Structure formats: C-alpha cells, structure tokens
Length: 447
Image 1 (tube, rainbow, N blue to C red):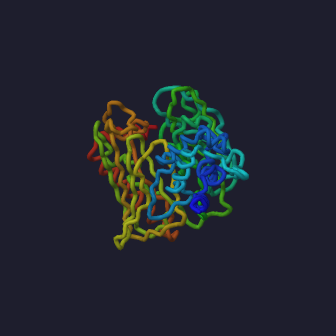
Image 2 (cartoon, rainbow, N blue to C red):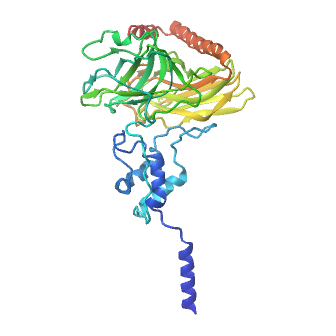
Image 3 (tube, rainbow, N blue to C red):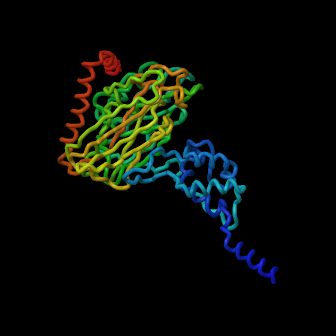
C-alpha cells in the first residue's frame, strides 16, 4: 500500500512539474521578436540568430547580455507615455533565457518556429527612391574625428514628403552618426570638393539647408508617426553630414540611402524643441578633470498646445544620465525620456505609441549629467583631462530633443518664434560672459 501511494504521489508531482524551457517552446519567439532584426546576415550585428544552432552557439553570451540589459539596445527607461516598437525585454523574458541556458539549452520537440522574414536589404521595406553616394569617401586608419558633408542629386521634379530615411553605410564601424538635410537650391553637389575626397568639411551643411532628421550608431530606421512627414522641395539635393570616427584601419564609405514618401502632404508641421539648444554650446559646458557629476539643466515653457510625437538624446562618452520631463499647468509631472546609463554607442529616437497632448503653459525640463573621473568606464582619457564643448568624440556636447507638432497648425509660427528666440537669447547672454565662445563660434561659422 505504501509503495502504491508513493507511486501515485510521484506521478502527481511529475504531472505538476513545469515543462522544461526549450528553444522551440519559449526562447525562439523572444529572440526572433527582439534580436533578429539586427542579428541576421548582412546587418550590423556580429552573428546571426535565425536558428537553434545560432542561438545555442551564443547562448551564454545572450543570457549575460540580456540579464545586464546591454541587449537589446534600448536605453530608455519606462516613462509616463508608452513608446512604440519598444525593445526592452520583460523580467520574465530575461529569466526564460537565463533558465534555458542554465539547463543546457534544449532544442525541444515538435516543429521549430519559422524565423521572421525580412525584405532583402531594407529594414523598412522597399523605398520609394534609392540613391547612392556619387563617389566613395576614404578614411585613414587614425586621426581626429571627421565631419564631412556629401551631397547627392535627387532629380525630383515635384515636392515630396519624407516619412522615413534608411541609410546603409558600407563602413559601419567608422560612421558614428549622420544628419540629413535638403538643399532646396539643388546646387550642393556642384560645390567644389575640399581635397581629393568628395564633399566639404565641417558641421554646417550650408546656410539654406533644411533638416530632415538623422541616424546614429545603435539606432534603427523608423517611420514618422502616422500622418507626419518632412517636406523635400523639388529640385533638392540630399546632403549627408557624416561624423566619421577612425577605427584603426582604413575604411571606405559609399552609402546607399532609401527614401520613403507620404502619399499626401501632412496637415501639421513638425518642429524640434532642443534643450539645451545647439547641444549645450551656450550652456557653459566646461568639465574639470576628475569631476564626477557635472550637471546642466535647461527649461522651456510651451507658448501653445502641442502634440508630442517622440524624443531623442545626444551626447558623447562622458555623459551618464539624461532626463526630460514635462510639468503640466496643474503641476503634474510627466517623464518623457529617462536614460540612467547613457552609452555613446547606442543612440536612438523614441517615438510614443500615440501623439501626446502637452497644453500651453507646460514647462519642459532637461537635465544632463557627465562624469569626467577615472571611475567612468567610458572615459576616453586616462588620466582624465579638462573637457569643454567640441565636435570631436573626446570633446563633449549634450541635448534632449522633443519632436512635436502644434496641436493647431495656425500656432506653428508662434511656437517656432519662441524656440528660435530662446536659442538667440542664450547665445547673446553667453557671448557677453564667455570670450572663448566667440572664438568657438567664429571657427564654426568659418566651416
């Protein structure tokens, strides 16, 4: 009788035991959804994750990278408004991967899940227009960072409205970020090149150019929210402003760029509200060697109702934390973006799932922290050195940018006026108190 009861109890325990975690059962869906976009042939990731063999080969690395949240590359912490296309794994997903690796990474029975299908070559699908740099740019193995503007004729005979730009660089390791501009005169490609390489140097793409967004290392190309687009006037050149970071070996860059167009013009105009303006150029960014927590703060009060579409951030190696909040007229504080562990190599744009109304009188507050001590594992200088605002990666800059549209299109001019006035006022105040800034501005304007 005792033996019979023991067998019954054992069978009952087995029946209640959780099924083992397997690749086919639980892990494949997590990896295919969150990792395969980059971890596939032809993309930036160093290895593919489209099969059980791929995942098992790198299982220990996957468990370590996801547990530390290094991967997937998503720096934004949960905010007051949900982000679309979020690549942040849940605690349950991370535990599933960790347990799978700890138990020997079983493949599991049954048919393996089908890996995701991607349009060959393009993450966003086939573009409406594909263009290529007219000539390759050759980088030396070593030397300072390079800012180079290269124009590409588009041959457009009518206005277009851009909903997304996808760039495919050939020297991925050397291209840190790219800013896109439209040159409505269509003459930028006729400008004489400086030196033997195509394009011209500097952080100024030309006085008449119109910003069209950009791309930075670690970011994925994205469509603007539904109904929003950027005007690309007929006859325009596309000007690509590259920030090249030498890698220690010669590199050749000859990008292919895909443009996606809206079917009709948008009803409202996009605007970027950057805090501090010009990436902190006028904000006294001057960090002594050894300073562990240098902080810059900036604010802007909305003169009109706006609909917030998304937010982005930019800084160099020494930045550690960034935060952008919105204090509503009634006093309620909303977090728009919070990054508690900034990484120079992973810069992205974060679009909200829905356009979020921020009423007139809302105060935007930006806060950026830098660590110029030896304790900062990202510090490129050992020992630390005095750092000021500059273009090179070893210099610093920093800003948070809110991407928005006026809630009512007729308010656009008022919003644009206040944004530009804030920047002009900060520039005037700083120039009178910081003679070194005059030299810096002179150098930038001479580019």
